[in-house]
Image 1 (cartoon, each protein chain N blue to C red):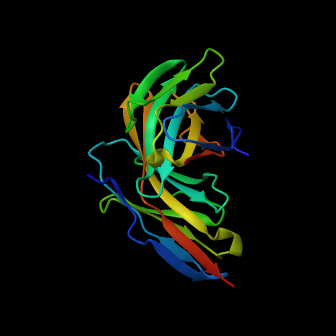
Image 2: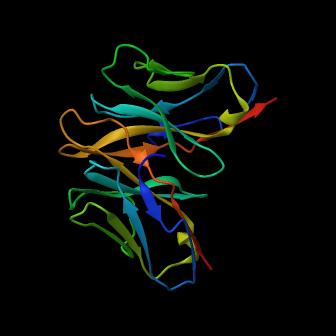
Length: 115
Length: 117
């Protein structure tokens, strides 16, 4: 158990809908990262938040957005869903800064299926 | 441009034998980090081992070791004494700086390892 929790574990929805994925980082970790794993694109970095602020953006679509709350949990919002958005979405957390750990701890993932 | 290359889509190894999973990377940073993660069929991503670009010794964690050849830009994972539970996808990843004190991971496409009894 990495200490990172993600809910829900599975999500099935229809095209055009909007969903919210939730992530709670490890205790003490200030950074949260979101990744998308799909068969054709592999594992791709989407976005990073650090202590409530957006720090880095990767291949995140405009239909997707994220935020990190004062209690450090994060939510990834996916809207106007398309079939191609079906994927495993991972959240990871890390301590960032001087003397920080080097690894990102991954949550169990949320499997999104868009029908 | 692809920054992490894993050239072996699939590998087979006999139980109790050692196996090497290849990873080459491309970066112009002087300071970077290389990671290996394991993803079993259940889907979770499990951290295995880390190598920093300034580390002089190859990283080792139990049965896992990282064969780091900086001049060749390679960071191969060696698993000794393979076990049936080692059957999984293995991903090589590189840490790239994305701002002050922040970084993101770029992953390779993975190698599927199958351990044969």
